[in-house]
Length: 91
Image 1 (tube, rainbow, N blue to C red):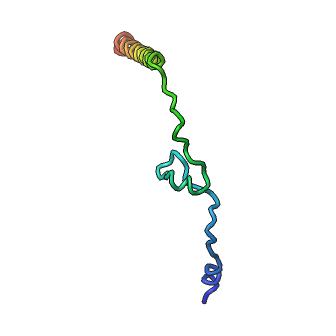
Image 2: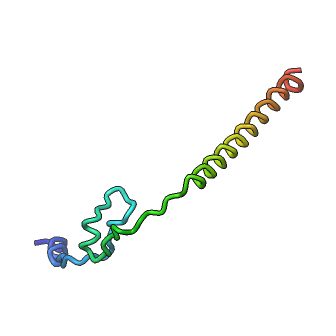
Image 3: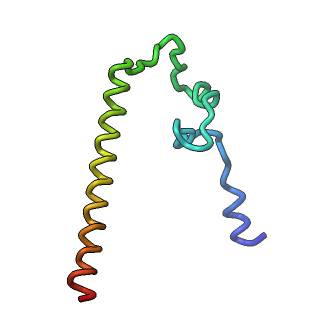
C-alpha cells in the first residue's frame, strides 16, 4: 500500500452537516429537507399581505409615468442626434 492510499483510508464521514446548502430561493431548494434539518416549519396560517386596488393602480400609474419619461428622453436624444447629423456633420 502506498502512502497516498494510507492517508485517504484514514478519513471517515461522521454524517455531520457543517454548512446547510439548502437555502430558500436557490434552484435546488427542498422545504422538506429544511424542516427536518432543524429549521422552523412554515406558518401556513400567516396571511400574505396584498396591496389594495388603489395601491395597485398607484404603482401602475407611477410605472407608466416613468416609462413615458424614459421614452421621451430617449426620443429627444435621437431627434437631437439626427439634427446634429443633418446640420453639422453632413453639411
